[in-house]
Length: 167
Image (tube, rainbow, N blue to C red; front, side, top):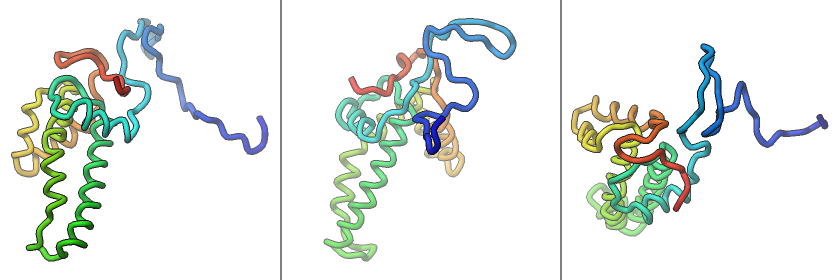
């Protein structure tokens, strides 16, 4: 190895088996991986395109963690930027109008609901579980846990395992 060499990929422990590859469990059982989670996460731009262009009001199917959380980050950054624009144009007082933020909220209301429902579908839960947000304190914590957990690695009632690639 040359001095100053930096590998492109650092693997700690064993690598994750690919689909169709034979594997052995720590207990000696052998098998073939027939379905698995996506090997790479969706990029920021792809996630925003997927939610706003491909699935604007698409409540069917599944959304990966990266798709959901990249879109969440996009929404928060847009709200922050539009809040500054509203403040600069209309004033910083609480009673001052926030027209740009309001228009953005209206524009992304359906996509935000849709990606939340699809994220719950990825964990095998019904989209109606979004109503848990109405339960004070506990509901938001439950949704946060469900949105953070890894989805099912096999096709479920809501569709095949998402690929993290735009179609």
